[in-house]
Length: 450
Image (cartoon, rainbow, N blue to C red; front, side, top):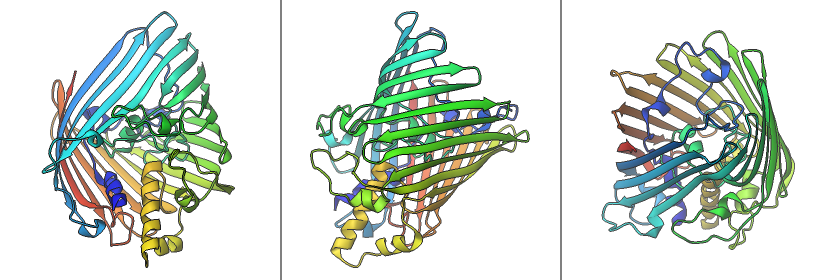
């Protein structure tokens, strides 16, 4: 039964490459967007830095142990022990006064005890970005593959229209790193910046639908299986509020309309919201729609009346070194409580197949299974002395009351970092997290900055 193994990605929490990603903002960061959750600042314009070459590299070794739920496997579960080696590179190089090249790539090799030498299936290639940026100080044209990260919420971004099928390896379950370590779209991006706002327009054409099968595939069939286009405009109002409007179009579901808003309340609290009105079909329609084997990642041609996806949250800096965030997530295209209870309790082989197919699709598409979730996150800098960090989050399915909890300790050394990550998927059988194959996961990893 292949589908349960696909779901193992839900609980394979890995370490962050550096302690910095787990650090909370300091108390003197009084701008609203500085206080917002990581990776959430608007606009996400990727504006060039001064004309200096940036070159970064990372090597990472990880060892882990998983505690399995036997009922999620048709036969004996795999070995409890696992390992991973990862290599990543980032280059941002000025080519002329108005042209620069950006390249970001990552390779992951995973294995399990008793399975021998890793084969081609254990090697995952994530070509995150590879583009040329042409422009002056406030106007740019990017051509190639780029990673658009949209949204102000931390754990669930309805307006993140580039997320579907973008994750081919999951080096961390930290939502900010999931958005960073993924495939970009291949296309053209035009940007215009002003002191108080920006406009970004993107066209990502359909390039290929059939999988290549190559070990180091760029996965064009995942990132560009269908034509997509979007425009987003952001504006800052005063020192405390920023808003963004977005319109997205694809031939399968038509136009979608989105917004992002963040505002500073007091000196240390940011309230933020994002929403998307989409005509995409329901999760059931999209997951169970007939698929062309030669175009497995093509958007199914199903659409309906407009439905709402939304996130509402608050980020609070309690002290200079401790911050927390609380969020509520809603997805009008997902299963309601009654429909989910029926799906998650299959009474026949065909119903079980449907259940596994929906779960597998939701993981690949990064969609919610049910309509409402609650999320909480806390970050503590220097809990055990200088250069240490502790980060934790939990996400609860409000329909079946299952939850997923993730905890990471990080220690930053001079040119490397050590992290210990623990994850626990809790819930009864026939719930979202109660049917995750790995009940608990523990991982120790060492990453070296080059």
